[in-house]
Image (cartoon, rainbow, N blue to C red):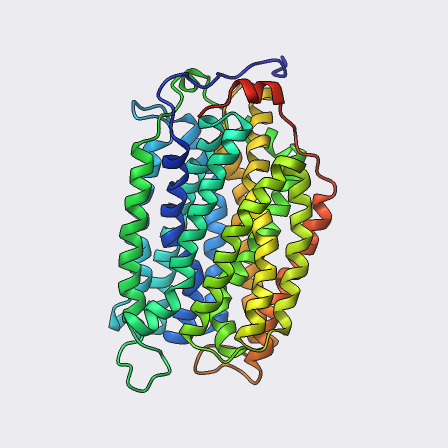
Length: 461
């Protein structure tokens, strides 16, 4: 029996979800998780004194756990049938769990902070919980993009709003965090008058968690899922996984995305330490650098979006990857704020290009899977790809481990003989290697296309 000619349900013609309401949801999903990714390493090693090797071990374990639970969450989402839809219940529950976990990561009781074993347990427990909640939210949020907006042009518009929301969230949760947490709401760990350097991050985690979850709930409660898709046969788990693993897109696009994700994870969690040890800057320096880079990326996403309309998503994606790889190499030679900003803007060019195309590439893969197999299983498909993406945490852990074994960096009290070089490698050399691998693999990818006539006929305001 073949599924090649089966046609999946078309989107319902009523109760269309607006591109803006859907797109702004990514602002909410990005705020808490970017605070975690951008400040967790600095907070636990430099502020609380956890050994970087111990941090790396925990990071590796929770990455593996997160990779394992990802397809389970996707599978459950695809098979869920409720009067509220398939995705909405998971978005609501995941948001509430993320609210609690993201606050507790940065709200460490004194007794826990001063006990090395309890600190590791606390860190592992709430980091894993936050990552699980993030997996649930993003598997369901990402699965809605091709379902709600089947027209390529409208989908591109919704994705542009998503990415703009993500970048604005990055300005707040990445760019402004060092200054707000260490100068406005708290104090610098190196300041002898600073009684509690954790308080700024604790206060900021509460603000960002409440804001982010409020936006996620606003988006989720306004989503109108396609009721006709719920009438489809529920996808079987093992057959779905087998078909996904046999897909050439899983082993090409999935690996490319994993390389890109690992490179960005290295940059996000290492930048505050790069600024401290390689540039000799403080929280204000870190804020200026990140805000300039992210604001540049916002404008550049619009430029890349126009190139997508001219070149198509695939060609644009393939051109953005090598640009990003080369750009990260320039960070190695930055020695002050001015040269770091110049290198950071170069990074923003490549980063914005990948950002503007990645989700469009994935959405077309999901469209192709639905056409060929006659069932919408975006949740498990994205979750399967997410396994590779989540496992990039193992790569990050190896990079962290190398800081200790190769460069001697342990924490803020024991930074080693050359922390400057350590974080130049961490923030520049390792991302270049990963993105170069991704660029090479992308040369062998041919993304499934779409019917432009159907796209125009299906376009929505």
